Amino acid sequence: MKKIFLYGDREKRANYIAALEACGVQAVVSLSPQDSAGCGGLLLPGGADMDPAFYGAENTASRGIDRALDHTELALAHGFAASGKPILGICRGLQVLNVAFGGDLLQHLPAAGAHCWEESTGDKQHPITAPPESFLYRLYGARFPVNSAHHQGVGCVAPGFQIAARAEDGTIEALCCPERYIYAVQFHPERMALRLSRNDTVDGLPVFQFFVGLIS
Image 1 (cartoon, rainbow, N blue to C red):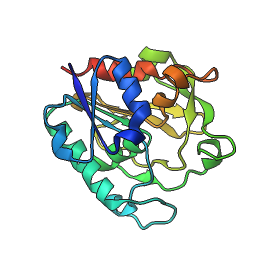
Image 2: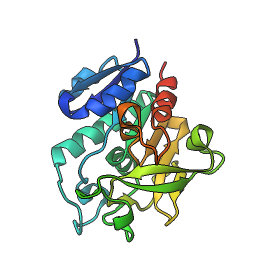
Image 3: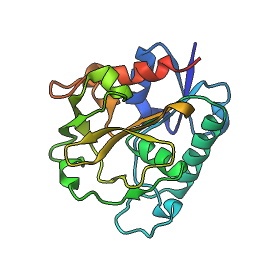
């Protein structure tokens, strides 16, 4: 059975685990990076903001920073990429990947209110547009609705990465680097799939099925 590594506490990764297992793979979830040995892919999940020091900026709007987590996920990203093993980044995971390979972040989007999770409303929802060459275009077409729970976003795109989707306000909603088998989305497909499927968004499970299909 294919194995995919997620760094973190298993209880806090239940939605990701459910989506991966629905695709017929084993999710190896651990706080020990060494347990990634033998895994064919890496999933970098959502979470709090990165320390802006990792992309050479002062902290102006970043919160919930955990430098140890940043160090670990950056190291995992480089390690899996060096081994030619596929990586999927989700929300924070997209941002980690962009920083890991030379990009930077906008610490607070100009239109953050349209994108960020709020206690009263939960995830926001908005349409995004994917160009014909995007992996998302193959899954969902040119324009489709997704959920949204972020206040930060991609600034400068990492060298070698391609923009795979944008929101109507220009916010980058997906990146990819096919040569390195790296794919990332700013939305949360695990919260649009299975028991968490929504009537106002696409089904998120095809994102995981696409990712699993890359793993040998």
